[in-house]
Image (cartoon, rainbow, N blue to C red; front, side, top):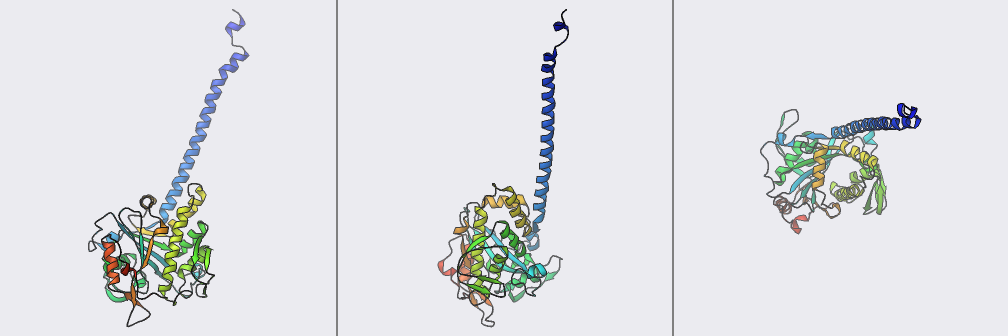
Length: 359
């Protein structure tokens, strides 16, 4: 028998070896891919857990019990949005207008009404200097705080906490609050920086030594520190009262929402993470929204709402006759406004007019 018939030649050996090399190479490739997938999955899970853990939740339903207004008869939704402002500590004192004020307060409050259909929305600002009746509330430690008349609206948060703010809003308006969302202003500064700033049309020159804000009228792109001073300023606009800056706060919120919506988040995962990290660090929500999944689902349901078309209204108020530095809800305008929101109906034009304007 010839040598060719009994033993494979060099070429045959090479041909036989190739499938084994391919199989070995395929196994190595699959192994590397598996390791990368596991590593990426672990990283994604870690990132998700970190962002998810940033969000703080408040069980509003448990705190308020059953004594609440009825839900809307439609699929409309009402959100109470608070801007909480703590100026204690060296970092916050540097953020424009910190001064020597300590403690946390609800510096900004808006009831955002999203009618059935989710194609438009209206934001009603409640001036922080409004005198309200605070209902009896239960604090986080279980102790009960008696109700009290003629208290400043922003003192409710500082003295009793967010659940009592929700209860106060529900009692004064008869509007059921479906969700609660609180934005910490220090974290808000980082969010503005993460999205690269926000452009606003400054209505007039602002020279406010208290907040450290100095701007000329016209379109201005504000960084985080400037934005924080912009929503805080009260001495650089109008009559120096809280009413004067409400228009700035509403304007800035719409500009911020529009800027976030216009960002190419899918095109820049790194930037998306920075924005998400800043946003979640500054958020406290009701327990129904206190997760990335719940927030994402809610955001998707709101996708049809264009921030540029959102209507902004200040709760109609009048100067208090006993203390002219305070305001009270003006009737019949405020009653008409809240009734329209309760019924998910068109807000009458006269319900949008406030006797006290802060101008």
